[in-house]
Figure 1: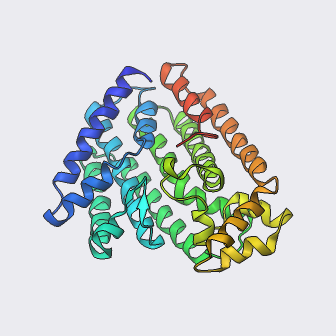
Figure 2 (figure 1 turned 180 degrees about the vertical axis):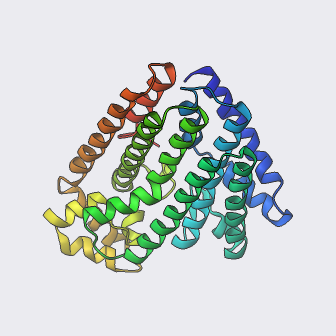
Amino acid sequence: MPESAFEAVEEVEERLVEVGKRAPAPLVEPSLEALMSGGKRLRPLLLVLCAGMGVSDRESLLKAATAIEVLHTATLIHDDIVDGAESRRGVPTAVAKYGREIAVATGDYLFAETFSELAEIGDARIVRSFAEASEGLASGELEQYRSNGVVVDVEEYLEHIKLKTAGLFKVACVAGGTLGRLTIRQVDALATYGQALGIAFQMSDDIMDLVGKPSLMGKGIGADLIEGTVTLPVIFALREGDEKTIRRVLEDPEPSPESIEAGIEAVLATDAIVKTEAWANGEIDAAIADLDFLPDCPEREFLEMVASEVVGREV
């Protein structure tokens, strides 16, 4: 990683602590715990790298990089509330530890702080891009909630993850390119890269939900199946495998451990994982190809490396 990008992400860590500490008193502890819960800071890193391909104001860059991680954290808290999740990354969620009211207020505070940071930058284009991403997140979460237990097709699945996951990757890249004063064509290329990277990232998560290690993930194995969330591997498996066994898990509000295990085995007995990996790798190839429009520099090389490591990553 370019040294300047590393230093910027380190400073974002410090600013995240400041965001947590200035929360209303009852929300300080849950805010700090959520913000410091061990995330990889991939979205701030993308923003910093994209800005580094041009010339940006450092203070504005740090505010935007902080804002993208605060927004991401807020969405995780609200996701956990909707899902009733007990733990994330091996620790109790805000809703499990503090109750629904405090968790909702914490998420709302972090959403507000996102736009407070952005307002100080004073660039309407960046505020607009974050607002559009936030709207997409809300819409994607609602659509996913409504479709729990319902078998969706590939097109619907892709629309969900473009809104829920890829949107933040895309806005990180767009905001970075905008702050770096890159050309419209270059910012468009970064937007395409970010979206493709986000799609591949979610597909990789979908695979890990079925084959990953619980200690390395924010949730247990088979959590998506248990919640009734139909992911791409499940869509493929329903087409070519034991549909009845898989549907039994998806449609049961409280499936038994035996039913869950049978459902996972039914998915793994098909080529669903291989097909999902192939699709994700196709998204990565597309993401890297779009970087051809960007300057040849260390930041671009690192963006290529980030993309190449998304599929098959351990965490």
